[in-house]
Image (cartoon, rainbow, N blue to C red; front, side):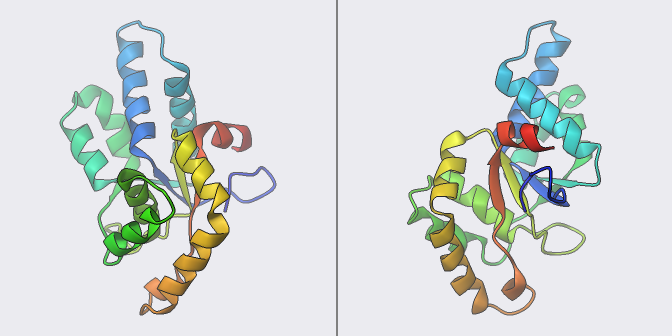
Length: 181
């Protein structure tokens, strides 16, 4: 499901660590009376729009750990409005397979979290969209979507429920999310 105006807004969205970092940086810069960068503004606007709607926002465990070590007055907004995904059973396997599509190890892990991340309530988050500042990640995903989806479907078809019913999430940039939320 994408952020197109004619479609329903996704219910579960994973924020890439770059987006979470830019939201944190935005808050720090504003507090210090410094002008935020365009990426920081973009990230903050997307974060605000999504967090004020009926959208469950997620970050990864690694991102949450980093934010917990940052200045709490700036990090608490992100931590309070997101839920943390932890690694699911098939996350590492899917991440390795994504590497064959020319994703960096870090990008492959982000997509794998969106596919196989676990939340504390429902066990499988089944994230519908991954929002990122990484244009190369989004472009590579879009260009290879059909092949990635085919590989994903073959993998989950051999898994037991509830994993067998998972669907591949969308990967979109914050700029794309801004034009369609």
